[in-house]
Length: 262
Image (cartoon, rainbow, N blue to C red):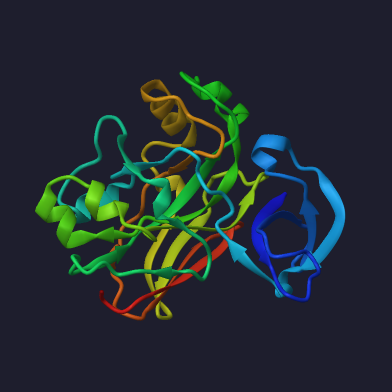
């Protein structure tokens, strides 16, 4: 299933409040009653068309976005390091989340804003100390993320909270796919039409079961929490007013524009 969250258009007759929907095909949406992560996927009689709505972030984490650093060997090398013995984790605030086609706002205190293409895991139930063999039981689905980073501030601070925590620095979308199975799918970042990152999910040093097992040993995961799983080589700056598209085969594309420098 491809689950979307959307703002209805004026000619849909569905009001103005954000809704969840099930994307039945490339354009037909069946409206879902309530938040599917909490209430399950219950279709109503209402339908509309994808072309008539504005997509929003498919999940707004109630609690946190957990991030995995240096999870691709080529990216660790380009950052001047090696793959760690165990996952490196850090947090983005839930206020950093935006959706497809929303604008990444360049903060006034940042000199360089970079893209990082990532697979995102959406947690579907409260869980702690999840063994690898049961990880699939706690995953609701997958989406695409851009771990936007103020690279100069990351270097200046020596830690990552400010550099990765600005509002708009965690685009997610375009939907949650509940049937997606991570494997050898290609993951790319395309900046103004030029491919900058080109890797495969199979290049992750810590795979999804290992990541969820490790993170859940550290902290309780809640429904709607998101874990983003690291980025391949090729990260780099997004110029003012540029367009960045993160794509994963089988999951679609997530496109955002970058504002002028603040």
